[in-house]
Length: 71
Image 1 (cartoon, rainbow, N blue to C red):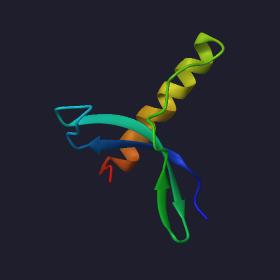
Image 2 (image 1 turned 90 degrees about the vertical axis):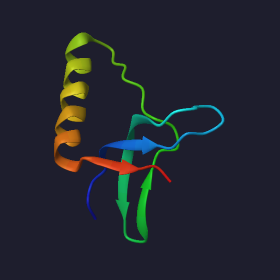
Image 3 (image 1 turned 120 degrees about the horizontal axis):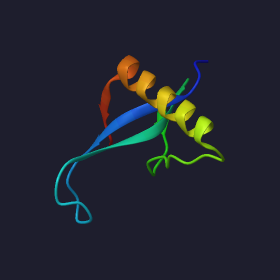
């Protein structure tokens, strides 16, 4: 089984968001189909170095996996 990664998801307009928007979610490639977190991830850390590490991981995953539609 593959490991989870950060995934940019394109969200369609809804009552809460009048316009299309993009957010980062955790994406899990499962045997019976992919799954992702319902809510976008927050970027927080206990120190600046950890925050930088998380942001670099997110940027790398965006480059590698691109954008998917949130459904």
